Length: 267
Length: 282
Image (tube, rainbow over all chains, first blue to last red; front, side):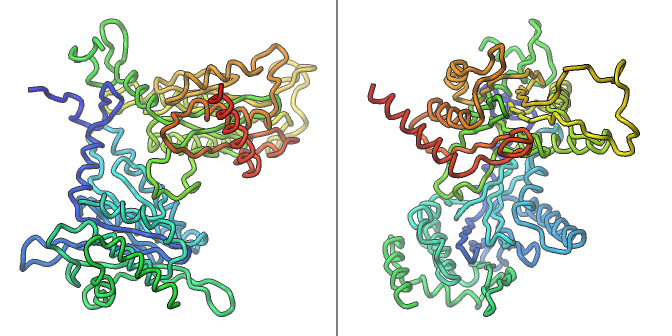
């Protein structure tokens, strides 16, 4: 049988200039359950589907707060994500200590990007087997970044990674023009609808398998803006949101649109 | 490729019997798949430009910059594996800062190219690493002003070793391109990435290497750069154009590396699209 000789380590280029080990690591991201992130002008949300190993076991955590103003959503190897999460927490704390203010989101993302890149260039190391959505708020407002095992980081308007995430991305692409002006609640509902697109046939969103995280900038009375610290919601705290997107039936994108428009008229 | 299956291409730093390092050649292939980057050395500065392919509709427009500032007067653009490029940039910044610490003066473009060429070359020497999957274009404007050194007494010798040569000037715009092998050359106009062939053909038509030095001004070069990237671009795909420039102290950027102002970039893009349409009609 044909054997690929170029995929044993991350220091070997294939004749086409590809590094298969890095591409395989990207496949590990697709094994994780789906996570969705969306940023508006004022808020950024992360929503995730949690998996349980068996009926009676607990659900795997998907959202990790990093600092007051940043959190990550993970898809892939959870243990790798924990290493990155710890590292990011340390970096954020260190930044607060030296500069007396929170770390800009892009700076944080670029640090883990270069950390991951090193793993793709040195023998004996392996790429991280996890993809992240990094959401946070800084002086320039809300941000959403995607991180890949290759060390590639890109700022997105909205994105989804993990199993069957293409369906969620299609929903996001369809609605991308609406996100900028969404308020906090609308943004969460868009996130949940995108998430629903990626569910397998007979599964649905429940308070057990759904996580929601939000952060944003709130305008105070005097015109100054304050950061709404990143907050993760689980269990009964997500009930209302799940119910609010429960009635859009199959082909949710269509019904979702009319409902979203209805919302705008209301406010 | 006859090399495949011989085993000489399975590890870095291995010579084949005819004296080639295949892993370095494969790294070049990674560059050849990346978006086109170009650099133009002009009369009054340097212009850098890159074609950023839009891989997803969900990317935030104009948020992901590809041309980096390494020191006040130095810009770097690259084609190939983007995380490798970011690593390269970080190292270049370290070099520029270390140079300032040691010599109390900004690093010359040629010196940065030399240091970074050496760094890239080191990644072709060991089996424990792989070469960089990028080709980088380094642009800079070395100041012609004499920069006094901290604690300097007097102006230094007027003649002899380290002395001043009457009528000799220094500084000006410089452009270098560094390949995965670590090889680098100075250029009048440089291009790399997927559309390099078409871009090179266009660069060669410009008056950059004449005996009187380059005739093109930066503003003209910005328009040419936009046009060239549109020519080199594969029509099916959407892309963003990013452009930066570096002038001397008396120019628009006052010796610093900056993004080309939005108005000028948009004008350059408009002209580029117009030129494309005119070509289509022919």
